[in-house]
Amino acid sequence: MNIQKLISAFEKFAPEYLANEWDNVGLLVGATSWSADNILLTIDLTEAVMKEAIGMKADTIVSYHPPIFHPLKSVTDASFKERVVLDAISNHIAIYSPHTALDVATGGVNDWIVSCFGSGDVRALRPFGNLPPDEECKLITFCPEDQAEGLRLALSSVGCGRIGQYEQCSFTTSGTGTFLGKEGTNPTHGETGDLQKVVECKFEMVVSKASLSLAIQALRQFHPYEEPPIEVHELGERPRREMGVGRRMHFDKPMQLDELARKLKKHLGIGYVRVAPASGRGDRVEVQTIGLCAGAGGSVCDLAIDDGCEVFITGEMTHHDVVAATARGCTVVLTGHTNSERGYLPRLKEQLGELIPKANISVSKADAPLWTYF
Image 1 (cartoon, rainbow, N blue to C red):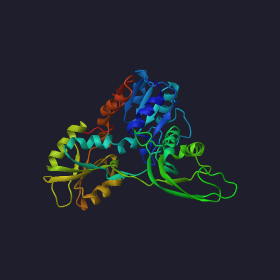
Image 2: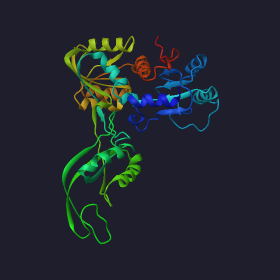
Image 3: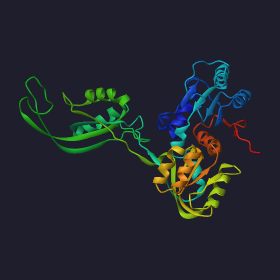
Image 4: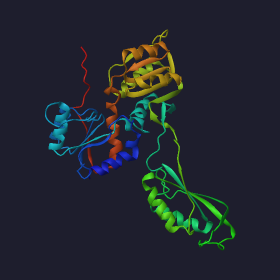
């Protein structure tokens, strides 16, 4: 198996276009033709993890956090980031990072966290609204009804009509078209200089911008008219409530705050969480609506509060952001940055294993929290 198959697997559930604009996701080191038979999963690509990868003869590392985030001016042994990249290249180990694409994705890190709380209504705090690259515009033409099927097949063959896992998607509506050919034209129906009224259908298919020129060429080639009518409409955002930044959950039944903390600790496999109760409220309170964001989620805490969340769960926040949140009546629960993410790796192993069953996938043993408490 090669790296391209690993990338294709990620594209099925956490495609790169889901990532935040500031992020650096995807294939960071290596070539798509490199082998990906022995894959190591980690949250942080430290030198200890790289040593583990070399020792187990891994050919690919999937590092949740991108080891190359800010541009490198050199690749030497001068810093640990450069050494990690240098070791990867020297040992022919590819590096792929999904990061925020996995946070945003349905069934990703945030959904994994929220699953520990039982039943309730779950949606994204900020729904994902960008268009996937295969659904960016709509191609429209008008043709005789008996010609629509041929156009559908021709346009489908060049990439039109793909919506998610469905292909050859199109729509037609019937009507009457009029045209008058000037001198020198050769109309399919009627004569030059005569106004024609023809029973036609409006024919629509979605197409990526990358395939648009090829689609228009095919439309001109297979359309029966001398001068086929062509319209191209850009599509607006189509937010999906279940996919996006963070998660909001409204429990079917209220839950005590201490019970929420117990469920969270058990699910994440950690011994403690830090809780900052909302101003004027203790820690013995019932909770029904929570917001959460894996990692450093302080930037979306206000969004959660505005959306009626009584508790906000994340890995880390600044002191002043916590003070501001509690003053607004929201209890803050902090798990530790990577503590909110690391427990997801076994689930990621399952997800990838279902898509690339021939690959040997392992979760790093060297990847661990940085903090030790005395």
